[in-house]
Image 1 (tube, rainbow, N blue to C red):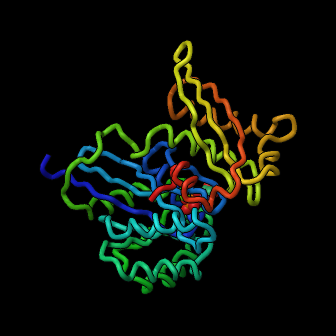
Image 2 (tube, helix red, strand yellow):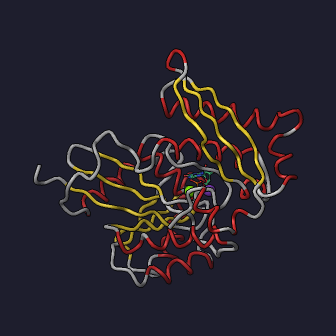
Length: 296
Ligand code: GDP
Ligand code: K
Ligand code: MG
Protein backbone atom coordinates (compact mmCIF):
# COMPACT_ATOMS: atom_id res chain seq x y z
CA UNK A 1 0.00 0.00 0.00
CA UNK A 2 3.01 2.35 0.04
CA UNK A 3 2.09 3.95 -3.30
CA UNK A 4 -1.33 4.99 -2.07
CA UNK A 5 -2.05 8.64 -2.89
CA UNK A 6 -4.35 10.99 -1.08
CA UNK A 7 -5.14 14.62 -0.63
CA UNK A 8 -7.62 17.44 -0.14
CA UNK A 9 -9.00 19.35 -3.09
CA UNK A 10 -11.06 22.48 -2.58
CA UNK A 11 -13.63 23.66 -5.13
CA UNK A 12 -14.13 27.41 -5.25
CA UNK A 13 -15.88 29.81 -7.57
CA UNK A 14 -18.75 32.25 -7.86
CA UNK A 15 -22.20 31.10 -6.77
CA UNK A 16 -24.02 28.83 -9.27
CA UNK A 17 -21.05 27.74 -11.37
CA UNK A 18 -21.82 24.10 -10.48
CA UNK A 19 -19.48 23.26 -7.58
CA UNK A 20 -21.97 21.09 -5.70
CA UNK A 21 -23.22 19.39 -8.87
CA UNK A 22 -19.62 18.48 -9.68
CA UNK A 23 -18.96 17.06 -6.24
CA UNK A 24 -22.08 14.89 -6.26
CA UNK A 25 -21.17 13.67 -9.75
CA UNK A 26 -17.68 12.64 -8.62
CA UNK A 27 -18.90 10.95 -5.45
CA UNK A 28 -21.81 9.32 -7.28
CA UNK A 29 -24.21 10.22 -4.51
CA UNK A 30 -26.12 13.30 -3.48
CA UNK A 31 -24.42 14.74 -0.43
CA UNK A 32 -24.39 18.42 -1.36
CA UNK A 33 -27.60 20.19 -2.28
CA UNK A 34 -27.92 22.01 -5.59
CA UNK A 35 -30.15 24.71 -7.01
CA UNK A 36 -30.13 27.56 -9.47
CA UNK A 37 -30.04 30.03 -6.57
CA UNK A 38 -26.93 31.69 -5.20
CA UNK A 39 -25.98 30.79 -1.63
CA UNK A 40 -27.42 27.31 -1.77
CA UNK A 41 -24.31 25.91 -0.11
CA UNK A 42 -23.62 27.45 3.30
CA UNK A 43 -21.15 25.10 4.97
CA UNK A 44 -18.00 23.47 3.80
CA UNK A 45 -18.70 19.84 3.03
CA UNK A 46 -16.30 17.07 2.16
CA UNK A 47 -16.99 14.43 -0.46
CA UNK A 48 -14.71 11.41 -0.31
CA UNK A 49 -13.78 9.36 -3.39
CA UNK A 50 -11.82 6.20 -2.59
CA UNK A 51 -10.32 3.96 -5.27
CA UNK A 52 -7.84 1.06 -5.06
CA UNK A 53 -4.85 3.37 -5.18
CA UNK A 54 -6.06 6.76 -4.01
CA UNK A 55 -8.37 8.78 -1.82
CA UNK A 56 -9.48 12.19 -3.07
CA UNK A 57 -11.23 14.40 -0.56
CA UNK A 58 -13.14 17.15 -2.32
CA UNK A 59 -14.24 20.20 -0.35
CA UNK A 60 -17.37 21.88 -1.65
CA UNK A 61 -17.57 25.48 -0.46
CA UNK A 62 -20.11 28.30 -0.48
CA UNK A 63 -19.67 30.56 -3.49
CA UNK A 64 -17.40 33.51 -2.91
CA UNK A 65 -19.51 36.69 -3.03
CA UNK A 66 -19.80 40.04 -1.27
CA UNK A 67 -21.45 39.29 2.12
CA UNK A 68 -24.62 41.15 3.19
CA UNK A 69 -25.18 39.68 6.66
CA UNK A 70 -23.35 37.65 9.29
CA UNK A 71 -24.32 34.38 7.69
CA UNK A 72 -22.79 35.73 4.47
CA UNK A 73 -19.55 36.62 6.30
CA UNK A 74 -19.42 33.12 7.67
CA UNK A 75 -19.89 31.58 4.20
CA UNK A 76 -17.16 33.62 2.53
CA UNK A 77 -14.73 32.93 5.38
CA UNK A 78 -15.40 29.22 5.04
CA UNK A 79 -14.60 29.29 1.32
CA UNK A 80 -11.45 31.42 1.65
CA UNK A 81 -10.25 29.53 4.71
CA UNK A 82 -9.83 26.29 2.76
CA UNK A 83 -7.35 27.74 0.29
CA UNK A 84 -4.17 27.24 2.23
CA UNK A 85 -4.88 23.84 3.74
CA UNK A 86 -5.23 21.83 0.54
CA UNK A 87 -3.24 19.86 -2.04
CA UNK A 88 -5.10 21.35 -4.99
CA UNK A 89 -7.55 24.15 -5.71
CA UNK A 90 -10.22 23.81 -8.38
CA UNK A 91 -11.26 27.27 -9.50
CA UNK A 92 -14.54 26.66 -11.29
CA UNK A 93 -16.15 29.00 -13.78
CA UNK A 94 -19.33 28.88 -15.83
CA UNK A 95 -18.50 28.50 -19.55
CA UNK A 96 -21.68 30.33 -20.47
CA UNK A 97 -20.87 33.46 -18.47
CA UNK A 98 -17.24 34.17 -19.14
CA UNK A 99 -14.90 36.43 -17.26
CA UNK A 100 -16.41 38.87 -14.80
CA UNK A 101 -15.69 41.06 -11.78
CA UNK A 102 -16.61 38.26 -9.37
CA UNK A 103 -13.85 36.12 -10.87
CA UNK A 104 -11.24 38.85 -10.47
CA UNK A 105 -12.11 39.10 -6.77
CA UNK A 106 -11.31 35.39 -6.45
CA UNK A 107 -8.24 35.51 -8.70
CA UNK A 108 -6.77 38.25 -6.48
CA UNK A 109 -7.05 35.89 -3.52
CA UNK A 110 -5.52 33.02 -5.47
CA UNK A 111 -2.31 35.00 -6.12
CA UNK A 112 -1.38 34.62 -2.47
CA UNK A 113 -1.60 30.84 -2.16
CA UNK A 114 0.91 28.12 -2.91
CA UNK A 115 -1.35 25.13 -3.67
CA UNK A 116 -1.56 24.14 -7.37
CA UNK A 117 -4.59 25.72 -9.04
CA UNK A 118 -6.66 24.11 -11.80
CA UNK A 119 -9.05 26.14 -13.90
CA UNK A 120 -12.24 24.10 -14.35
CA UNK A 121 -14.52 25.37 -17.10
CA UNK A 122 -17.92 23.87 -16.27
CA UNK A 123 -21.18 23.73 -18.25
CA UNK A 124 -19.49 23.12 -21.60
CA UNK A 125 -22.73 21.44 -22.67
CA UNK A 126 -24.13 24.98 -23.03
CA UNK A 127 -21.54 26.37 -25.46
CA UNK A 128 -20.05 25.82 -28.91
CA UNK A 129 -16.43 24.53 -28.99
CA UNK A 130 -15.27 27.80 -30.61
CA UNK A 131 -16.46 29.70 -27.55
CA UNK A 132 -14.40 27.37 -25.39
CA UNK A 133 -11.15 28.39 -27.10
CA UNK A 134 -11.97 32.06 -26.64
CA UNK A 135 -12.66 31.46 -22.98
CA UNK A 136 -9.38 29.62 -22.44
CA UNK A 137 -7.57 32.49 -24.14
CA UNK A 138 -9.27 34.98 -21.89
CA UNK A 139 -8.33 33.21 -18.66
CA UNK A 140 -5.04 31.48 -19.31
CA UNK A 141 -2.77 34.34 -18.19
CA UNK A 142 -4.88 35.52 -15.28
CA UNK A 143 -3.22 33.10 -12.88
CA UNK A 144 -0.56 30.38 -12.96
CA UNK A 145 -2.86 27.45 -13.70
CA UNK A 146 -1.50 23.93 -13.43
CA UNK A 147 -3.98 22.87 -16.10
CA UNK A 148 -7.20 24.08 -17.68
CA UNK A 149 -9.90 21.41 -17.85
CA UNK A 150 -13.35 21.84 -19.46
CA UNK A 151 -16.16 19.65 -18.07
CA UNK A 152 -19.89 19.29 -17.81
CA UNK A 153 -20.73 18.39 -14.23
CA UNK A 154 -24.37 17.92 -15.20
CA UNK A 155 -23.77 15.49 -18.06
CA UNK A 156 -20.50 14.08 -16.79
CA UNK A 157 -18.27 14.97 -19.77
CA UNK A 158 -14.57 14.84 -18.95
CA UNK A 159 -15.17 14.42 -15.22
CA UNK A 160 -13.28 11.10 -15.10
CA UNK A 161 -10.38 12.69 -16.93
CA UNK A 162 -10.26 15.45 -14.34
CA UNK A 163 -10.18 12.87 -11.54
CA UNK A 164 -7.24 11.10 -13.23
CA UNK A 165 -5.35 14.38 -13.62
CA UNK A 166 -5.90 15.20 -9.94
CA UNK A 167 -4.75 11.74 -8.89
CA UNK A 168 -1.51 12.18 -10.79
CA UNK A 169 -0.87 15.45 -8.90
CA UNK A 170 -1.58 14.14 -5.40
CA UNK A 171 1.21 13.19 -3.01
CA UNK A 172 1.57 9.75 -1.47
CA UNK A 173 -0.44 9.70 1.71
CA UNK A 174 -2.69 7.78 4.07
CA UNK A 175 -6.31 6.78 3.62
CA UNK A 176 -7.99 9.36 5.85
CA UNK A 177 -11.51 7.93 5.75
CA UNK A 178 -12.81 4.33 5.65
CA UNK A 179 -13.44 3.39 2.03
CA UNK A 180 -17.24 3.31 2.30
CA UNK A 181 -17.51 6.75 3.91
CA UNK A 182 -18.54 9.41 1.39
CA UNK A 183 -18.71 12.54 3.52
CA UNK A 184 -17.47 14.08 6.75
CA UNK A 185 -20.94 15.24 7.76
CA UNK A 186 -23.41 13.09 9.71
CA UNK A 187 -26.62 11.91 8.04
CA UNK A 188 -28.58 14.31 10.24
CA UNK A 189 -26.87 17.24 8.53
CA UNK A 190 -27.46 15.88 5.01
CA UNK A 191 -31.14 15.32 5.87
CA UNK A 192 -31.56 18.93 7.01
CA UNK A 193 -29.87 20.07 3.81
CA UNK A 194 -32.16 17.97 1.61
CA UNK A 195 -35.16 19.65 3.23
CA UNK A 196 -33.59 23.07 2.74
CA UNK A 197 -32.98 22.23 -0.92
CA UNK A 198 -36.68 21.63 -1.52
CA UNK A 199 -37.49 25.03 -0.02
CA UNK A 200 -34.89 26.51 -2.40
CA UNK A 201 -36.58 24.80 -5.33
CA UNK A 202 -40.16 25.65 -4.39
CA UNK A 203 -40.02 29.20 -3.04
CA UNK A 204 -38.81 32.55 -4.35
CA UNK A 205 -36.98 35.75 -3.52
CA UNK A 206 -36.03 36.15 0.15
CA UNK A 207 -37.87 33.08 1.45
CA UNK A 208 -35.35 30.37 0.53
CA UNK A 209 -32.48 32.46 1.90
CA UNK A 210 -34.22 33.23 5.16
CA UNK A 211 -34.60 29.65 6.35
CA UNK A 212 -32.68 27.13 8.39
CA UNK A 213 -33.67 23.55 9.11
CA UNK A 214 -33.33 21.87 12.50
CA UNK A 215 -33.72 18.10 12.84
CA UNK A 216 -35.55 17.51 16.12
CA UNK A 217 -35.71 13.73 16.17
CA UNK A 218 -34.93 10.62 14.18
CA UNK A 219 -36.23 7.28 15.41
CA UNK A 220 -36.93 3.77 14.20
CA UNK A 221 -40.56 2.81 13.75
CA UNK A 222 -42.19 -0.46 12.78
CA UNK A 223 -40.77 -2.44 9.82
CA UNK A 224 -37.48 -0.52 9.59
CA UNK A 225 -39.37 2.69 8.80
CA UNK A 226 -37.75 5.85 10.14
CA UNK A 227 -39.56 8.79 11.65
CA UNK A 228 -37.83 12.10 10.92
CA UNK A 229 -39.13 15.24 12.65
CA UNK A 230 -37.80 18.62 11.55
CA UNK A 231 -38.51 22.32 11.95
CA UNK A 232 -38.06 24.93 9.25
CA UNK A 233 -37.02 28.21 10.86
CA UNK A 234 -37.77 31.45 9.09
CA UNK A 235 -37.45 35.15 9.86
CA UNK A 236 -40.96 36.53 9.47
CA UNK A 237 -44.54 35.36 9.91
CA UNK A 238 -45.35 36.27 6.28
CA UNK A 239 -42.63 33.83 5.24
CA UNK A 240 -44.09 31.22 7.56
CA UNK A 241 -47.40 31.65 5.75
CA UNK A 242 -45.74 31.09 2.38
CA UNK A 243 -43.91 28.01 3.64
CA UNK A 244 -47.09 26.44 4.92
CA UNK A 245 -49.16 27.44 1.89
CA UNK A 246 -52.86 27.18 1.22
CA UNK A 247 -54.22 24.45 3.49
CA UNK A 248 -50.69 23.28 4.08
CA UNK A 249 -50.07 22.57 0.40
CA UNK A 250 -46.57 24.08 0.23
CA UNK A 251 -45.35 22.26 3.32
CA UNK A 252 -46.78 19.02 1.95
CA UNK A 253 -44.91 19.54 -1.31
CA UNK A 254 -41.65 20.27 0.46
CA UNK A 255 -42.15 17.18 2.59
CA UNK A 256 -43.01 14.89 -0.29
CA UNK A 257 -39.96 15.90 -2.34
CA UNK A 258 -37.59 15.81 0.61
CA UNK A 259 -38.83 12.41 1.72
CA UNK A 260 -37.86 10.86 -1.62
CA UNK A 261 -34.29 12.13 -1.32
CA UNK A 262 -34.02 11.14 2.33
CA UNK A 263 -35.22 7.64 1.52
CA UNK A 264 -32.58 7.39 -1.22
CA UNK A 265 -29.92 8.59 1.20
CA UNK A 266 -30.85 6.21 4.02
CA UNK A 267 -32.04 3.29 1.94
CA UNK A 268 -35.21 2.89 3.99
CA UNK A 269 -38.78 4.15 4.14
CA UNK A 270 -39.28 7.42 5.95
CA UNK A 271 -42.12 9.30 7.66
CA UNK A 272 -41.25 12.97 7.51
CA UNK A 273 -42.96 15.44 9.83
CA UNK A 274 -42.30 19.13 9.26
CA UNK A 275 -43.07 22.23 11.33
CA UNK A 276 -42.44 25.91 10.63
CA UNK A 277 -41.29 28.37 13.30
CA UNK A 278 -40.41 32.09 13.22
CA UNK A 279 -37.15 33.34 14.76
CA UNK A 280 -36.75 37.03 14.03
CA UNK A 281 -33.53 38.05 12.27
CA UNK A 282 -31.79 34.74 13.04
CA UNK A 283 -29.24 35.27 10.26
CA UNK A 284 -27.73 38.19 12.17
CA UNK A 285 -27.65 36.55 15.59
CA UNK A 286 -24.47 34.77 16.51
CA UNK A 287 -26.12 32.45 19.02
CA UNK A 288 -28.70 31.32 16.49
CA UNK A 289 -26.12 30.86 13.76
CA UNK A 290 -24.34 28.49 16.14
CA UNK A 291 -27.56 26.70 16.99
CA UNK A 292 -28.26 25.98 13.32
CA UNK A 293 -24.74 24.74 12.65
CA UNK A 294 -23.07 27.80 11.10
CA UNK A 295 -20.09 27.82 13.42
CA UNK A 296 -16.56 28.60 12.30
P1 GDP B 1 -22.88 25.97 -6.96
O1 GDP B 1 -23.59 27.15 -6.38
O2 GDP B 1 -21.60 26.38 -7.62
O3 GDP B 1 -22.69 24.85 -5.98
O4 GDP B 1 -23.82 25.43 -8.15
P2 GDP B 1 -24.87 24.20 -8.14
O5 GDP B 1 -24.14 22.90 -8.17
O6 GDP B 1 -25.87 24.41 -7.06
O7 GDP B 1 -25.51 24.39 -9.59
C1 GDP B 1 -26.12 25.62 -9.98
C2 GDP B 1 -27.00 25.38 -11.19
O8 GDP B 1 -26.19 25.06 -12.33
C3 GDP B 1 -27.96 24.20 -11.01
O9 GDP B 1 -29.20 24.57 -11.58
C4 GDP B 1 -27.29 23.08 -11.80
O10 GDP B 1 -28.19 22.14 -12.32
C5 GDP B 1 -26.61 23.84 -12.92
N1 GDP B 1 -25.42 23.13 -13.46
C6 GDP B 1 -24.38 22.64 -12.76
N2 GDP B 1 -23.47 22.06 -13.57
C7 GDP B 1 -23.95 22.18 -14.85
C8 GDP B 1 -23.47 21.77 -16.14
O11 GDP B 1 -22.42 21.16 -16.32
N3 GDP B 1 -24.26 22.10 -17.20
C9 GDP B 1 -25.45 22.77 -17.06
N4 GDP B 1 -26.13 23.04 -18.16
N5 GDP B 1 -25.93 23.15 -15.86
C10 GDP B 1 -25.19 22.87 -14.76
K1 K C 1 -26.32 27.16 -6.35
MG1 MG D 1 -23.06 24.77 -3.95
